[in-house]
Image 1 (tube, helix red, strand yellow):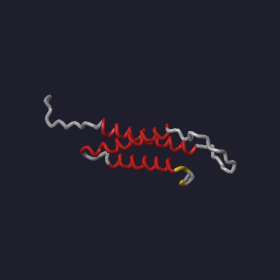
Image 2 (cartoon, one colour):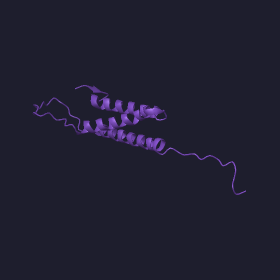
Image 3 (tube, rainbow, N blue to C red):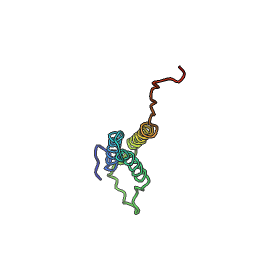
Image 4 (cartoon, helix red, strand yellow):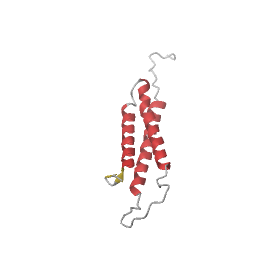
Length: 117
Protein backbone atom coordinates (compact mmCIF):
# COMPACT_ATOMS: atom_id res chain seq x y z
CA UNK A 1 0.00 0.00 0.00
CA UNK A 2 1.49 3.30 -1.10
CA UNK A 3 1.84 6.20 1.26
CA UNK A 4 2.29 9.84 0.36
CA UNK A 5 3.67 11.98 3.20
CA UNK A 6 2.58 9.30 5.67
CA UNK A 7 -1.07 9.16 4.57
CA UNK A 8 -2.84 6.97 2.07
CA UNK A 9 -3.52 7.75 -1.56
CA UNK A 10 -7.25 8.16 -0.93
CA UNK A 11 -6.71 10.95 1.59
CA UNK A 12 -4.41 12.77 -0.81
CA UNK A 13 -6.99 12.43 -3.61
CA UNK A 14 -9.76 13.72 -1.33
CA UNK A 15 -7.66 16.70 -0.25
CA UNK A 16 -6.78 17.49 -3.87
CA UNK A 17 -10.42 17.22 -4.88
CA UNK A 18 -11.49 19.59 -2.09
CA UNK A 19 -8.78 22.12 -2.93
CA UNK A 20 -9.76 22.04 -6.61
CA UNK A 21 -13.46 22.36 -5.78
CA UNK A 22 -12.95 25.34 -3.48
CA UNK A 23 -10.63 27.04 -5.96
CA UNK A 24 -13.14 26.63 -8.79
CA UNK A 25 -15.92 27.85 -6.49
CA UNK A 26 -13.99 31.02 -5.65
CA UNK A 27 -12.98 31.76 -9.25
CA UNK A 28 -16.42 31.15 -10.75
CA UNK A 29 -18.49 32.80 -8.03
CA UNK A 30 -18.70 36.17 -9.82
CA UNK A 31 -19.06 34.75 -13.32
CA UNK A 32 -22.15 35.30 -15.39
CA UNK A 33 -24.30 32.60 -16.88
CA UNK A 34 -24.57 28.99 -15.85
CA UNK A 35 -20.82 28.56 -15.27
CA UNK A 36 -21.16 30.26 -11.89
CA UNK A 37 -22.92 27.14 -10.55
CA UNK A 38 -19.92 24.94 -11.41
CA UNK A 39 -18.25 25.63 -8.04
CA UNK A 40 -21.39 24.68 -6.13
CA UNK A 41 -21.78 21.48 -8.14
CA UNK A 42 -18.14 20.54 -7.50
CA UNK A 43 -18.48 21.18 -3.76
CA UNK A 44 -21.62 19.04 -3.62
CA UNK A 45 -19.84 16.30 -5.60
CA UNK A 46 -16.84 16.49 -3.25
CA UNK A 47 -19.14 16.23 -0.23
CA UNK A 48 -20.91 13.24 -1.74
CA UNK A 49 -17.65 11.44 -2.56
CA UNK A 50 -16.25 12.17 0.91
CA UNK A 51 -19.36 10.68 2.52
CA UNK A 52 -19.21 7.64 0.23
CA UNK A 53 -15.54 7.05 1.02
CA UNK A 54 -16.22 7.28 4.74
CA UNK A 55 -19.11 4.83 4.56
CA UNK A 56 -17.32 2.22 2.41
CA UNK A 57 -15.97 -0.56 4.65
CA UNK A 58 -12.21 -0.92 4.62
CA UNK A 59 -11.92 -4.39 6.05
CA UNK A 60 -11.53 -7.35 3.70
CA UNK A 61 -14.27 -9.98 3.52
CA UNK A 62 -11.95 -12.83 4.33
CA UNK A 63 -9.58 -12.80 7.30
CA UNK A 64 -5.99 -11.96 6.51
CA UNK A 65 -3.27 -14.00 8.20
CA UNK A 66 -1.63 -12.02 11.00
CA UNK A 67 1.99 -11.07 10.42
CA UNK A 68 3.87 -10.05 13.57
CA UNK A 69 6.42 -8.01 11.62
CA UNK A 70 3.82 -5.37 10.65
CA UNK A 71 3.69 -2.16 12.62
CA UNK A 72 0.24 -0.66 13.01
CA UNK A 73 -0.51 2.96 13.68
CA UNK A 74 -3.67 3.24 15.70
CA UNK A 75 -3.73 7.00 15.93
CA UNK A 76 -5.97 8.38 13.22
CA UNK A 77 -5.81 11.96 14.38
CA UNK A 78 -4.50 13.21 11.03
CA UNK A 79 -7.53 11.69 9.29
CA UNK A 80 -9.90 13.32 11.74
CA UNK A 81 -8.16 16.68 11.31
CA UNK A 82 -8.42 16.38 7.52
CA UNK A 83 -12.11 15.54 7.76
CA UNK A 84 -12.72 18.50 10.09
CA UNK A 85 -10.84 20.78 7.69
CA UNK A 86 -12.95 19.55 4.76
CA UNK A 87 -16.19 20.06 6.69
CA UNK A 88 -15.21 23.56 7.80
CA UNK A 89 -14.15 24.44 4.24
CA UNK A 90 -17.46 23.19 2.86
CA UNK A 91 -19.37 25.18 5.48
CA UNK A 92 -17.42 28.35 4.69
CA UNK A 93 -18.01 27.78 0.97
CA UNK A 94 -21.74 27.38 1.48
CA UNK A 95 -21.85 30.53 3.65
CA UNK A 96 -20.05 32.53 0.95
CA UNK A 97 -22.34 31.10 -1.71
CA UNK A 98 -25.38 31.97 0.36
CA UNK A 99 -24.20 35.51 1.06
CA UNK A 100 -22.96 36.38 -2.44
CA UNK A 101 -25.46 34.56 -4.66
CA UNK A 102 -28.69 33.99 -2.80
CA UNK A 103 -28.70 37.17 -0.71
CA UNK A 104 -27.46 39.62 -3.32
CA UNK A 105 -27.85 43.21 -2.18
CA UNK A 106 -30.47 45.38 -3.84
CA UNK A 107 -29.21 48.94 -4.05
CA UNK A 108 -31.74 51.74 -4.13
CA UNK A 109 -31.48 54.66 -6.48
CA UNK A 110 -31.16 58.11 -4.86
CA UNK A 111 -34.20 60.28 -5.06
CA UNK A 112 -33.63 63.29 -7.28
CA UNK A 113 -36.80 65.17 -6.54
CA UNK A 114 -38.78 65.09 -3.33
CA UNK A 115 -42.56 65.29 -3.43
CA UNK A 116 -42.70 66.95 0.00
CA UNK A 117 -41.07 70.22 -1.00
